[in-house]
Length: 549
Image (cartoon, rainbow, N blue to C red):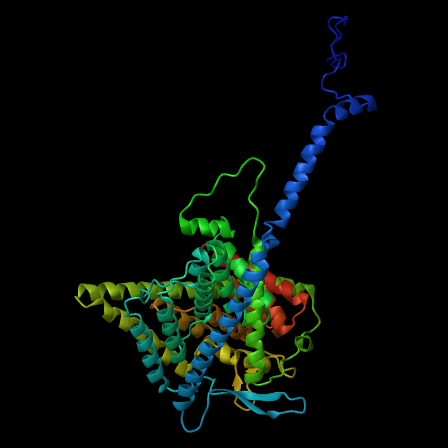
């Protein structure tokens, strides 16, 4: 060690040792000798690695088969068109019957919902306000329609092939196994139809997903596709059912991808779904082979179907719905301060709390549902009594809520856009909504309506009514957003509304990107506002879903 760490023993020709074996010879001569020794092996390994990485990036060659171009793409378009047509017929009939009884049970010639004036010089009708949506402006005569619709929806569940109350399949179940229950589907759609017609606070997305899945399965069977392609068409039908009614078909495809990751986190490939359906084990790959993603194969076909559905639905909307001039979001945006990004923290906390309260209420309702069922069984009453009682009781409670808080009537989609038009009036930059000549919707009423809307939704789903929860929760987020600046004056209105809408849904649903994109497309919000929305979604999910609430 004193001699510098070298072995100072004399070296002979028979015992020549490296004076320092830990030092690598990096002279040009030594490098060239070592390199050229394994030159062929190194180049071959590098090429193989490059090819492997390229295959992993590109995924499966889904477009290499002629059947993809001449059969699968036309089938996806057909699925999208059929889903759009049947979806429009379903919701057209539902909205017509709903509006008929809502207006018919009001006093005199009063109506519920938006009131328009004649078209202006640009062909746009002018929204004058929303009639009978204020506090206490409903009527308890609505209870007749609520109870009738709830009873009919419960009656459907007594048929032999109908789904079991309290354990029906949802949109998430369809995505998990891609195996629709064809015999249950007609009864489920009829059940949802009666529930929506009655005015219950449930979302239509489950009905849309079920309808799309059944059409995709039917087309796949008629064309005799293999099981993998049939699963792709089932997913295409669900995407067309959801994305066709959204502001952009891109949002539908992105939402399905996010839901698929949540539903099948271990393997989102179609091969894995087919293996689960057939009960086969995953085959062991040969040396040099690898699992290759088919994500772009899924996105391509689901996107084609969604685009076809979107074109049919929105073209119909242009001809049927009033031509309303939507507000330009850039006109209501103020000067953005990057400090606003931190405002996503308190908004995320509030939205996460709202989401947690909603789950607690739904859990309490489900517990009550089970206790009532057990009690009726112990009393010797037949099971059909429980089936008829719970949805009818839920409809009765929701009818009482809607009479005092009319904004909770239905899914909220029939007045959502109109509320945003009135709330983002350029002359009104404060909390609350000036409802034209029909009064002022104060922040306290909007906040209470947001809570009551979640309570109605929790009661419906907890008491066994089949339906979705996305649209009612989105509507509650909009109401919360218009009320929040009154309680937190430092948060601008144009930030509070999209952030609260995103925050409540993202607090427990793993689709933050699709909801943020949907609101940015719908409102035309800038990327700065999108950053605040993203912060709100992250905090809200950490408070609710992240804590396992």
